[in-house]
Image (cartoon, rainbow, N blue to C red; front, side):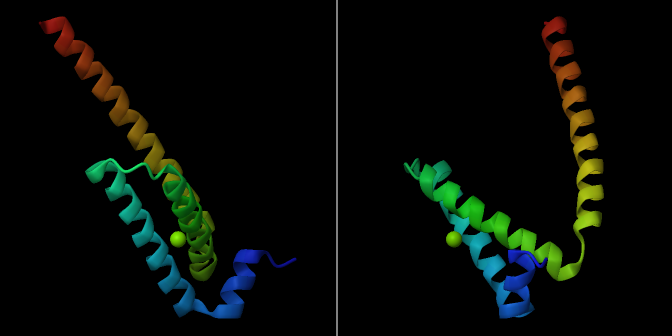
Length: 99
Ligand SMILES: [Mg+2]
């Protein structure tokens, strides 16, 4: 059965949905900036815009047929980040031990 993401993409088309994706990402950027720059109490807006972006990213993956590639790249990237965090922790411990 066709899911909502695929149905939205088929109904409204690639270009409008990818423009919507860009628009939602910009809305999330705006809310993050409001929080970190101006310390606005906008958690509910951040929640809404994060959900909007996740919905559009899901459509983007259907649009380009890249679910598998994104997942594989993500797993590799998370391993690299984990290694960098381990290195960071080791360096931090070394700095403290060296003082
Ligand atoms: Mg939005």
